[in-house]
Length: 587
Image (tube, rainbow, N blue to C red; front, side, top):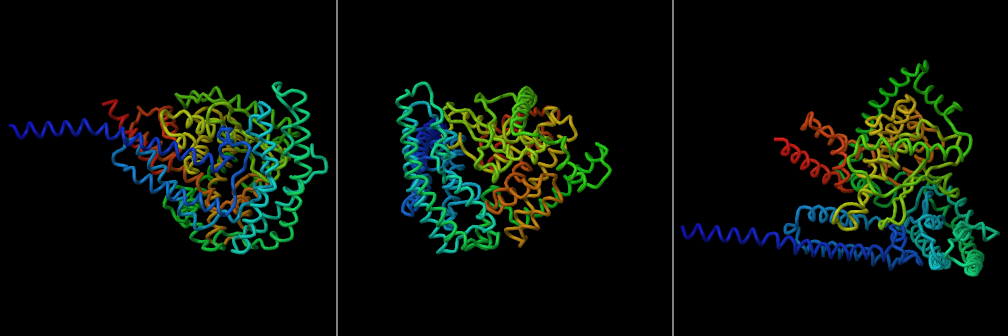
């Protein structure tokens, strides 16, 4: 009796102490994450700007080899400090935070050996398009303009550091494909202007808020013109010469990541990293082939529904060329995108209980990058709510931007796709900032592709051509699985990849070439979309089977977003727990 009493008392003491230990461990982890978040902002001033933290708006990231080595060492140290905290003592929510950050650090450290920084310029961006960050800066007072002037005056140092990395890349034979680099000279040329007021860096000085006096405006504009003429243009002129005469001739003729030093291991890593799975290139290739066949059969059904009598290839040609499917001017295309977004908004309540508080807008992609970039993209809002999210749409050559793709595209990039994903992430209660702003491609792009399909649940695909657009976009992501692995692991040529894409999707030639070049330039990234969507769709099917008539689609969608951006394995564990909890509620 006494012994039982003692044991019971001891057990009670342990149970009472457990929450205290969890609170202590959680507090240590919270402090660790706050310090790590601050480290990230200091190391990447551009990242701070995109997150709405304006303390470092007067500087660029230090791209010297010394600084890069210091950042890599800091990641290794951060992992050691994280493991010293002790996962078992944490609460359930903190364990998810811990696991997510550990996953990221471990892979950041693993990829250090591939020295990706030796290829700092791509056809989609780099030092030649650094001015683009001005799109997210506040420019609310004179200090904001002075900060931008400081960045403008630091452009030559940034160009010099970038050139040094490129020289090291040439020496180590870590070079991007020539077919992509041939696009870059025109981007550099856009920075070399005779009239400083036509410089992309000068754009912010074309308009001022009322808080900036007339005298300050004149002074700031004069300083900006001087910075463009005396520092920015000479720096880019020198960079253009180096790029054309010393760098481009060394670019590799091939396109496969496998051709790089330790290239096959690099591509295998990227496939695992982006999909957050253990799938091999061969497995992903086979998944892609099966999805292409499945979606192609559905395309045939829609073709028959609209009464088209030719082959699927002829239907693709019709969709790519018939004037009825295209706007005549960039202005009318932008108006149509904005109207479509407003058509989607009121239908969101059909598939969500919880809508994010942060608003979003629709903007054109800047002219200087539009010819070489994708059809659209999303820019998240500031973490403090001072800047809305923005859906950027490509207005370059409206004659190649078909209307039948606009619904699926808007559902993916704006609502309920990326805007919901990022805005809801910012509203995660009590989670560290890295979790609220996290972006795992398989989760984020998987959600975006899943969001395209929510258009059916919202009743938005009443037009069969819009439905064909959705299938085209889904096919686009399935084709990626085939062509990305084909080019980087199976010896496919660029021409074969373009032909395969064109044979299976109705996207225009302009889009197809840009997409294939994107997959060449960013190996493995495009694999994550379809793999992520397949996982989310499989989890939805699992929940429907388990809950039957009690399944609530709005609650399921809310739970996926409430989990935040995590590796797919963590998402599955979270949804499995939600299913069990929902079962328990109804017993």
